[in-house]
Image 1 (cartoon, rainbow, N blue to C red):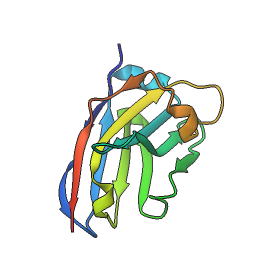
Image 2: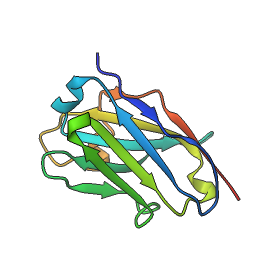
Image 3: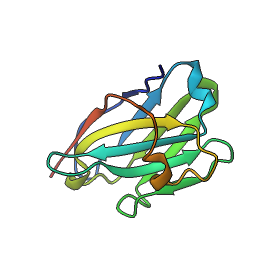
Image 4: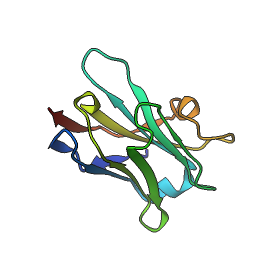
Length: 126
């Protein structure tokens, strides 16, 4: 069983930055689609950003474009989410996910991932 493990969450004021990290066992390298999703109380889980490790293609939700950057470090089997210019509406539990898909690693595709982390809390105060 592969369980991604998130870290890096915390509390920050609006306009600040945080970097989330997600690692797993060595089996993480078997998965080409990695992603970050988030969920806040009373809302459905939403995709934030995904990356295709085969070629580096990235996909972002409109709400985070230009502010968040997803990246990978293959040697460490780690995926990152750099979050800048944070807003109170970014407050949520952030989840990392990983899986293998034959097609593109769009947010819609990665939503169907089998492997999810336990989540890390991000709180942005105004």
